[in-house]
Amino acid sequence: MRKRIISLALLLGLAFPAFSGELTVKPDAPSRYTVAPGDTLWGIAGRYLQSPWRWPELWRMNRDQVRNPHWIYPGNVLALDYVNGRPRLSLADGEQREVKLSPRSRPEEQDQAIASIPAEAIEPFLARPLVVDPAQFVTGPRLVAGPDERISITQGDRVYASGVTEKGTWQAYRLGKQLVDPDSKEVLGVEAVYGGDLAVDKLRPDIQTLTVRKVAGEVLVGDHLVRAPKTALVNYAPRRPDDNLRGKIIAVYQGISGAAQYSTVALNLGTRNQMAPGLVFGIYKKGNAISIVDAAGKKREAQLPTEQAGALFVYRVFDKVSYALVLDSDGAVYVGDSVAAPEEP
Image 1: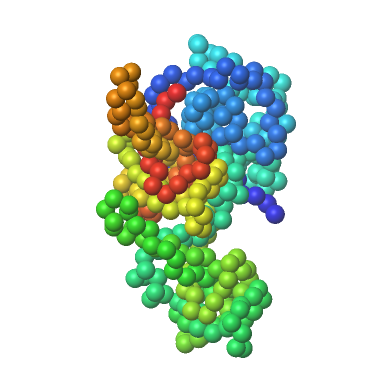
Image 2: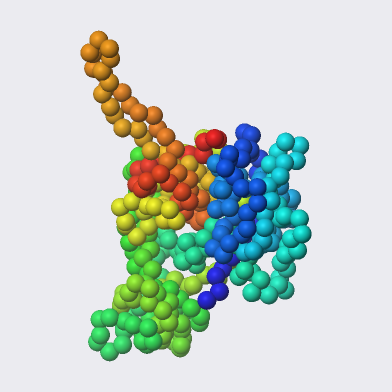
């Protein structure tokens, strides 16, 4: 199956992001590196920088390259050099595989080019609604009957719906848990639990016939139906959020207790807070309370400082909630951990 390439592009019309602080290369950074299958631009940048999200500076990309950066392939040799004292990573001398894709480029070429982050980590979430408005959700189309009297519905089954108005692919969902702001207690939305894909066979005014094409979890009579969106590439440039933009992790997708690398988490920040795909946040953990005994034997309570414990990358934004991918972390990431602009090393 062809893997979708996640584009490392600036949104059309946006200026190239400005970064603060000196770009410092790790002491053990390789002078030359051969790109391997499975590499990502984030991962390669992490070999060179303490802050991999600053990879556009390391690559010295101009606007055209950032908008269309699919030109690095497994087997390419990358070289690190310095221009006017600033580090630069580029294709080594003699490399001839630089390719700038156009709409007529072959899909095979796109499959070979490396992505920004593991595409498979976020691809399932790009074509599915993650947060819904319950009031709108419950008034939409629904599955009203399955095959015969069976409770379970499987791939290939014929089912019946009410409220479907057009042919094509539809997705089955049911309401999941509420997403609540931990401070204000405001209900920010309700997660939608994805069941599977269905295709419309016959449209009728009252009852519509569909065939189940895919079952991801389970499809049940009573599930709500949402028109499957067209899958689009994610166009973004990793950039630092405003220093005043702070929030918290309010959920770990699929309800697991702690998130690890490449897990998806929900944040209590959305478009109303000026959130946008591509923002990179630091994950901050509050220090533990400790007791300190001084030289005189007197005991006092103290709080260990809050420390950055990882980074996450925002890839889908709703009105009040955003979803982000944990890119790295020192240990598990939990609901209640804070997010803010990443620290400069």
